[in-house]
Length: 209
Image (cartoon, rainbow, N blue to C red; front, side):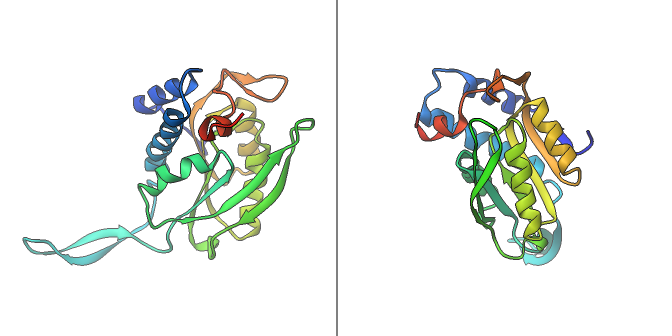
C-alpha cells in the first residue's frame, strides 16, 4: 500500500526488540517509546514546507531555510499515545499538542470517545496522530475521523507496532493519510492483542496494571 511506510532503520528495530522484553522496566520502556517516536518523526516530517529567510552568520549574510506556515500539530490517542509526544517535541518544540481520548470496549473491541481537544486552524497544519499500538485499527480510524471533522487535512499516523489487520483497516478507511509504522507483527489473537507484540503499551509506559 502506497500510503504505508514501514521503518527499516536498525536503531528503531533494536529499540523495539528491547521494548518487547518482559524484563524491560517502566523507565526504560518509557524512554524507548520517546526515542523511537523521535526517530520515526524524523521521517514522518520529511515533507514539512520551508521558506528561505535572510540571516547573518559570523562570516556573512545569507539566505537559509526555516519551517514555513503554521506549526505542526501532535495529537496522541490517550493514554498510550502520550508516551510518544516528548520524543517528537524534542525535534519540533514549537508544535501544538491536542488530545483524543478513546477507550476500547473489552467485548466488542469498538472504540468510544470520551475526550477531544485539538489545536486551532487544523486545516493549515501538518498533523501527527500518535498511538504506539495499531491493533484492530478501530481507535486509529475513529481518531482520524474526529480530526477530519475539525477540518484536518494533512494527516499522518504513527505507530510503533502494528497488526496487519489494523494497517489494512486504517489504510482502507483513510487512503489519503500517511501511515508510519516501526514494525508489522504477525497477527491479532482472540482478545485483539498484537502477537508477539509488547504487552499493554499504556500500562508499561505509566507503570500501571
